[in-house]
Image 1 (cartoon, each protein chain N blue to C red):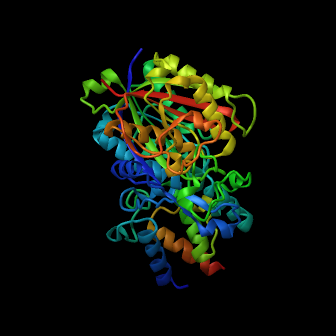
Image 2: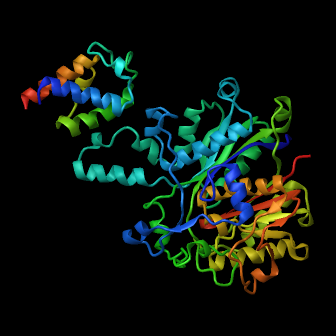
Image 3: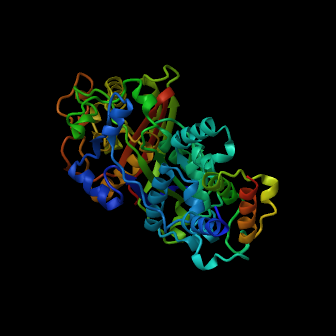
Length: 406
Length: 82
């Protein structure tokens, strides 16, 4: 079986629009969360959100490309351009070699709403325009980027709720490991707009700590009261090791394990056993014991039950070894469909620069989170192997284990 | 709307909305071969024509519009018939 390495990374998020900006934010423990008054006037229970600027692509991409792209495809274009650049992959290289794309994504909302509004108003579908169908499909990112970058390999979208981005990397890893592809652009994207998370807010799942937006996302803290929605896009280029060496590619890290499971219990309440099975499968796949994990980038979203059950699962598997843990969602908010990919990028940045980003806003543990070794201030530490957890609605679980390349 | 205004409006839309170089805008320019417009673009042109001129372009009539002059004439004739 082939070894699978990461030969390019890119990020566009609420804590930075480039790897350099994001690395600095992670190191400084900087939050990307704001209170959006428009959400409050629109009817949201919580107006908290990650703040993202829309990329300006006029003059960079032609009109036809732009008309077909929803906001999160624009984010994904930005993160992918950066990943290709870090991976020394040029447009000419893509013309001559087969590259695939697998992105995690689970919604594309505004185009659907705008389309139906136009038809209701005009009683005429011909008034919808040409871009709507391509913007509104869940596979919008992969369909757009595959055309823009002239990709000719595997091409589809992975939808697994808040584990989508992680599963996309996991599936890409399997495809390369088993020899079906040499190179795949993997990642995750998440839209950030007025329409996409209203139904999520309806569940009362978002933090109500609006008086201090930067302190609202407090994974594992006793006073956590809900997640803060956020978004953007992250890209990770996976490549067969021999192929990467042959072309002289920069190698950022190696994917050594992927584990997955389904809770099979509840539509929204996460379980303990499902994550334990996914983590255990990833460890087995990686061929390492729990004592080898230097850092866990937790899924922990700042919801009372979710963080509690992840703490139980981590304690069950890692117990006495107590690896250092942080949830970068304390800074970024919950990047949902993108999170599994972005958190791999965040962790690789920590690995490259030998530090652990803090779980900001963790002031007091509860009965369960107190058993974990949670990092509250940035620490210097060499990371040889890290685990990235991602869990989602419907009890979908994805765990990735990534090792420094030696 | 007179013919000059129709031409001015259409040319402006092609330059602004479709980002077509002004130097390419000539009456005998072929929409596909010279201006680079494709089938999906005609879907958007139909929306714009409806909004700007209140005209509904019909698919079968669209197929006979090959040059910019054809488009000017088609819109002018439709407006005359209204």
